[in-house]
Image 1 (cartoon, rainbow, N blue to C red):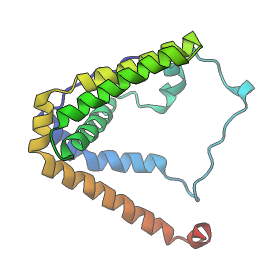
Image 2: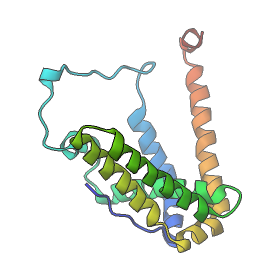
Image 3: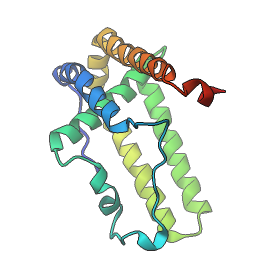
Image 4: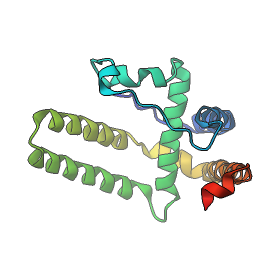
Length: 180
């Protein structure tokens, strides 16, 4: 299951920024419970249906709308690349260092994991991550640099909104007992 990598253009970044309030609202609604962190029921092992792949296991939890999936992937890419750009100094050397670190991890996994199936799994995961980082273009990084103030404003706004939401929920009856 190799996810396609889409480069972020300046216009796509602007689309993401416009769509983030609705995106975060939907994510927030999906994650809410009526009580204090209701436990997720886990069926016993014999009640799990067999699956041919990881895709079969996670598919019920993801939307069928490809535009929604692409938006989520682009939001994650934007947040990661904004983090690289937002640090002091150029982003490219940090991305290259992350790639080198992942290659070293691949070597360590290949030599230290005795199970060939696990080696193949780790190799696929790490190789996919390396491919994502290698796909970062200088044009993407430049677009993110140009829009950094707008991106930061949106990300900080979301973080502040999340904190306000937590404070509001801590005012609910019984919240003080849970905090003690």
